[in-house]
Image (tube, rainbow, N blue to C red; front, side):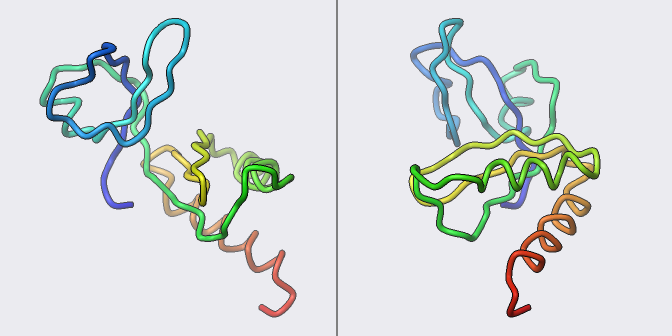
Length: 117
């Protein structure tokens, strides 16, 4: 997904007109992923600027191993990754300045898992 994304603490009532791209309710409050531009516009603090990569493989909630394979692949090249699992796809938030490296590693992983390629 084009753009830069950040995690912010959000009040229970939300962040007004800002689109919340992902949210998680934790005991400490709501964590939200929004665009970096929206965070800047609201004067919100953040410490991690991410690129958003959506895996094109369908992943059911009961599937085993996809998150482990992806995180192991990225960890092997020293790239941190925050995974957001949706109903149909997994989404990866990786350091924005390493997005191209992350994509290259994931493409290599995909090719190694597909004997037809």
